[in-house]
Length: 347
Image (cartoon, rainbow, N blue to C red; front, side, top):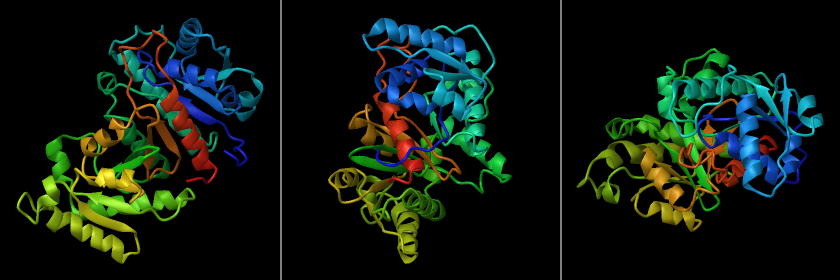
């Protein structure tokens, strides 16, 4: 990163306290201590202190002290000399590792709300979210299945509009491949029903706008088909003919660099080879399997369409690793890097 970093801090929500989120936040700061002047953690102080002890016991890298702040104050983040943690949720006894609980879901959601509000109100420059557990959120009565839907609702409320008026999309990326999902956390039956001309066109428009907003060229977008062989001329389904191809034609008529639909079993290979900048996938697993097969250590989840920059690691809470000091912060560091590049006008 060669550009001047923003003065406002980047806020990191700690994630589910029963998972690896708190540990990878500490491990990221330990591995790259230059980030300490940029980060504020929205979390639970006791949970983050426990994570720091675990990371310290597991390795030889010096672990920064946990410094307590009243909120995401830039002055606190640059002068504290440690990892700044702001008590952004109800105080509670640290929850057991690896167990799904309503307490963990509640405090994780509280941290996301507080961190999102800080960015929307201009007190922080971007949001990076550590992993949450969807079942824990549900047990806590959180009405959204994951980060994407929750952030969309919070941002829409801040803007005074409905979620329908603030469409968002999930982009998963790693150095060799980027893919944007037409739908996210819905059943496969509902995902198929979501493949409409209007939704495909909207996804192309959101993707094009995101790439251009953050300093990149107009993206070369490939659209995957829904059916095997992209429908084989209608033999295996008509979604490509009736919905997807008309959306691509409309996007091209509007000046977007859109192509397809292509057979989904080959289009990701074409993009990885450099033929396209991003692939529009028709449903969650179609896109995510392709990216995650290339490796989780460099994967980043970015929410497109929000009035703020939000990234996260491309992995979950990893309950089987929680509390053991074995979780690696690589993907979180990539997410932090991507957020800082975005707020500095990079691609």
